[in-house]
Length: 383
Image (cartoon, rainbow, N blue to C red; front, side, top):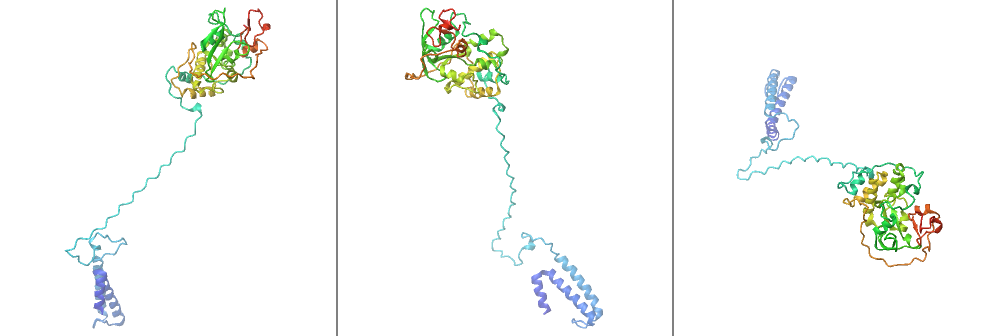
């Protein structure tokens, strides 16, 4: 029976397990012999227990050397010790080793996108690149200040009306009409000075306007100060002398023949507060305002400068005008209509009102002219 147990242990536990069991058996036998004085191994007395204990210790030492104590790590399947005790068939193909799984690469953390920067105000935007000398480049150079009070402004501080600054014998209003209108005719006896009729390709509305001098028709076309006089007053003109203000008010660079109603609608607005309804003309319009303010060293508000740069950025090659001509417009003729509600006459309370409307001087047979405003009765009132 003991032999059978030894055989089973040898098959299941290996040599180390077999020697360990034998050592335990000897130790148990030695202890039994010490207790009862005899052993089941024959006539062995208490004296034989000591050799049995020594033999047991020796077997334990040999068993540990042959089969070391497991460390708790899983056996290496590729090592000989882990292979099956059953001999492999030499004729069979070697077993295919299981592929060692590659370590799963660590995923890099997904980068967190930075929060979007707040939208800067127009004044904080980087200014667009502009060609030297272009309207956009000059607009970027304009001085920015706050608007000064309008206190003390009076139209007469810019002269008593249209004057003949270029000494050609004609006042500025007729000079601008002659420049901006086509098919012009003149009043006989005025040395081709007083414009009687013509056609205006109105830059502000993009329409054709027929000009006929007369009480009910002259104000259809008015002469606009592109940089309004009161706007100039609040942005540097208060510091000028009288001659400079008169030159400014009559400078062809700052004057355009335009639709009368749109001129009144504009008032003293700057680029930030008013632009022509005709969008195709806005670049040329703003370029003219830039040229005037640059020429006369007038400053602009921040909102005004931002608006100038915004418009001119859509046409960065827009040149500065020189005042001798206007941007040509191609406009299809519109059907002529008669407005039954149009007033039959224009009334100005005095010359100051006529000048404020840009209509002075007033000629006989012209809207707003009255003999009581013509002190020397020469046919020209509010000179």
